[in-house]
Image (cartoon, rainbow, N blue to C red; front, side, top):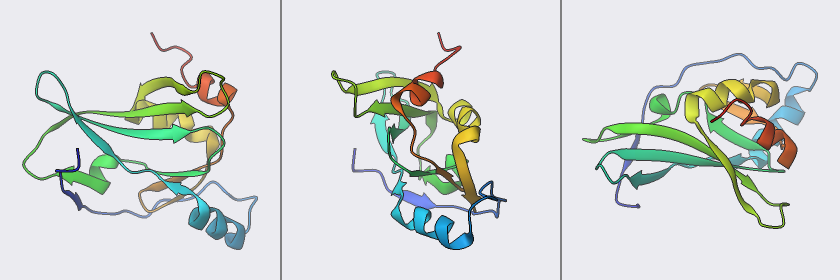
Amino acid sequence: MGLFHFKKTEKSKTQGHGADMNNQTIDRLVQEAYRANPRVYEKEDGTLLVGFALTEDTDSLFPIVPEKQWALEGKTISEWIITMVSLTNPQGGVIGQIEYHDAIKRLEPFIITKIDNWALIRAMTHAELSSLLDGEE
């Protein structure tokens, strides 16, 4: 739905996890990483769902707290999700979905660094993405 206009909201400084990498390497990874962009969907009950795709084998930048990064003027967002997407599975497509904030917690071991409200997540294998779903029903 391209009709929604996102407004940028406050940023906060966060510490990083890439202690074993030099700043030049981290800067390069940040510049080359895919920056996650939200997709907004209206659910059957009229509420809004905002989703982000995390694709295997791709370094990605994700907002740590998406509500601080984006808001929909005049709209209430009822659900934030991250969808894990396969590139190597012969069937391709969706591996699974997790509520956004839970997913960010589960992604912590894969985060290289945090800058402001952004987390740089290293490229993950299909198996690593699938393992994020452990404990999901």
